[in-house]
Length: 163
Image 1 (cartoon, rainbow, N blue to C red):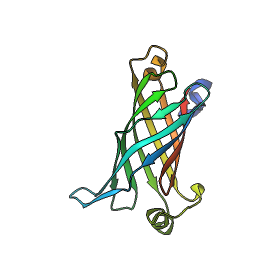
Image 2 (cartoon, rainbow, N blue to C red; image 1 turned 90 degrees about the vertical axis):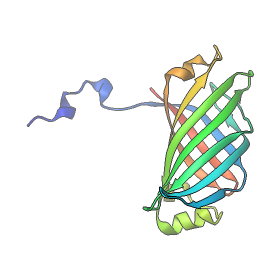
Image 3 (cartoon, rainbow, N blue to C red; image 1 turned 60 degrees about the vertical axis):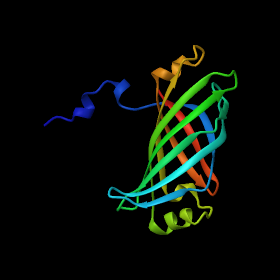
Image 4 (cartoon, helix red, strand yellow; image 1 turned 90 degrees about the horizontal axis):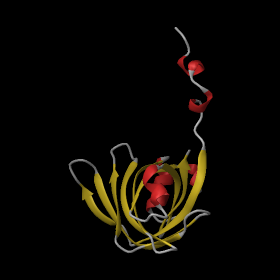
């Protein structure tokens, strides 16, 4: 048997990232719908925020939402929809799915609104973008990833373009 990875060209051996922006969301207190047939459903209404980066900065508009499913294994999956307004006025729809999990004691502290070290749990997202803005049209054609940290009043993310 041959080592398939050894046969790959260098361009396929690693993935490079380029910083896109850091984003802070303002979220109203979580609405806990409760245990549904699939998972425990929690919903966060996003009423604002900011994002800042070398190539893209602006504000998060009111009207976003974060539909969370707390699974039986303790992990929380995210289904988020946001509207971004770039500093030049361009509107960008941002959607992302993500996963947050960690040791039960860390997750309990997060749920209680306590500050915890972001290195003590896993919180990753995979955003996509849609825009009609010609200036920001490049966002329609990229793949992005991000690392998050849950603060008591909302998350902060560091988002990267996958090159």
